[in-house]
Image 1 (tube, helix red, strand yellow):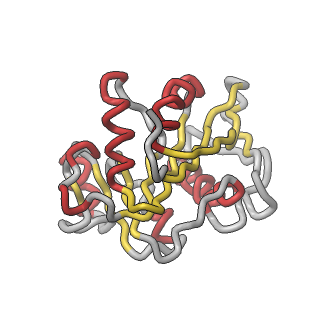
Image 2: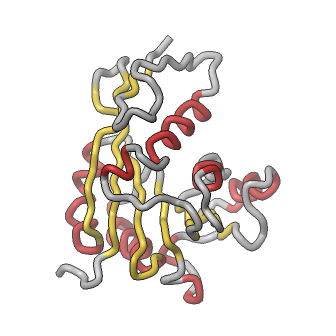
Length: 204
């Protein structure tokens, strides 16, 4: 059994050394619960400056089958949209009731309709992984989706991905990062969180 060691950012989170049996356990569910515990009020994301989901309009970029949409719903979001160019995955999210035809957006963030830009309070991009050629345009697309006081919540599995994106993020966001947990099997940091505030003036 592999062990997922949880390193809490505050007292309200899951206990340390939570074990997940990857052979028989609900791995995605366990990771989703761990993420929710860090995005709730008084937890890691708030420590990094995040103002929470309560009453907010949220866009989940790379939503796939809607597997993480329960997080903003459970934490009080007023509206939750899911965006993904994979139409078949989006259909699963609609069929399971995570999204409906109005909130399921079958496009990339760069292709977000003009009338939806500058309308979201929070953008989630969990397990963010972008081709090098699309990194600048994708981060700019996230920036354009947010209203003037909008916030970005992003997570990464690989530190290299976060580091390679840091210069681009810095042009569009004021941000802070933190390690969330380690996976003992590899003894390396395994999940990172970034909380970004939309810049009023872009850095060149």
